[in-house]
Image (cartoon, rainbow, N blue to C red; front, side, top):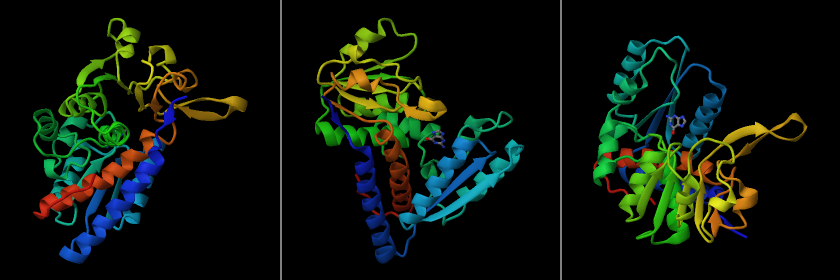
Length: 293
Ligand code: GUN
């Protein structure tokens, strides 16, 4: 039976360390990190995420600035807000919640954010920094996955890692981070030939496709470490909905060495990493050394 990797406990530990770092910044430097979150429109899932981000930012002792704009907001208005936040010295991190309404060019908006305030790590400059090993801001979900993997396995060097999914938010940065830790990395996706066979080679298997329970136990190498990034809402018993991952846990748990549950695995790490990135950005902006992992 696979060990369950407790992301909830790891996230709580990281939030506590963030809180302590914030206290030290206030005490030693008179500095309170600030995070601005921009939400355009009324997507219900995005509203929940933004509320949780604001709450946890305040709980960590940081300043939270929420900007809620209407569904019909135009590109120019959003870019004007980004410019204002870029030049605000009290704002160290800027996050624009995705997805954005169709009239807005998301790439243009992301790349208008000051890269040193881009706590999502989505700006082209940060993508380039990650790809070349330069210091920068790293996307929160893959960063959280790496923290769980390092806690579990300590040294990742030389391991076969397979990432299923090639999104800009998770799959691609995840592959870059695993490569930086000297894994042999395969980025697999919907067009991959013999996907089950490729997955069976993985010492580390990361599922980030957004398809409910797509990876069954017989795609998993015995003893492998499995990171399930999926958060899919499906019909459950009695007309209720429930959350499932991209991995079929009933069959996977009999084969894997360790696995992240859904919920309570990768999910809680994402916001904790956002808080961590905000402290990192605040330290960098003020020439203060940062060490929080
Ligand atoms: N929407 C879904 N995931 C994310 C994320 O990591 N960052 C932002 N900004 N929006 C998202």
